Image (cartoon, rainbow, N blue to C red; front, top):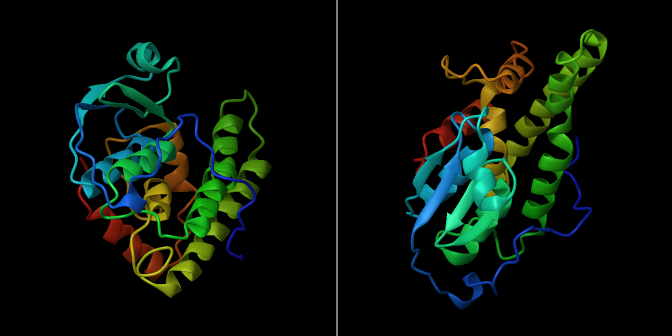
Length: 232
C-alpha cells in the first residue's frame, strides 16, 4: 500500500492564534481541563500530547450515558474537549495541533508538516471507516457477516502497510516522534495490547479484527515504544 497522499488542507473547528512555534515562544499554560471518558482512544491522543509537552490537565470525567458536562462547555457531547484557560477546543487531533502551537517544544510536527497532516487526514477520514462500519453492522438485527469479514481483511492489510512504513525508522515518519504516531497508536495498539477491563464494543472490534496470528515485529516494537510514553 502506498503512503496516502494529502487531498485536502488541514481544517479545524477552532480558529488558532498565529503560530508560536516559528517564533520560538513557549507560552505558559493557565488552567487546563480535559473532558474525557474511560479508555477513550481519542482522549489518549491528547493525554500523550499533554505529557509530551510537560503539561498537566484537570480531568473532568464523563460517562457515555451522561455527556452533559462536555455538552455544557462545547455544545456537543463527544470527547475529548479541552478547556485551555477558557478556550474550548474539540476533536482530538485539533487539540493536539492547538497544544503544539502553544507549546512548541518538543515539536510534534516537522517544519514541512504536509506528510504528517496528510496522514492524519487519511487515518481519521479513511482508516477509521472500516472499524466504524463493522460496529454499525453489529448493531443491526441481522449483521452482514460477509461484509464484516471483508472490512476485517482491509484492517489486516493496513497492518501490513504500517509494518512496511516502519522500515524507515522507529516512528511512522522516520526517527522522530510526530503527531502521526499519536494519531494512530491508540487504535493500532489493539493489534498486540488490550486492557481486560476495557469492554467497549469498538475496542473489542479493534482487538479482534487486528489479530491474525502473523508476527509484525516492527509494528509490535512501535506499539511497545509508544505505549512506554507517559500520559498526563
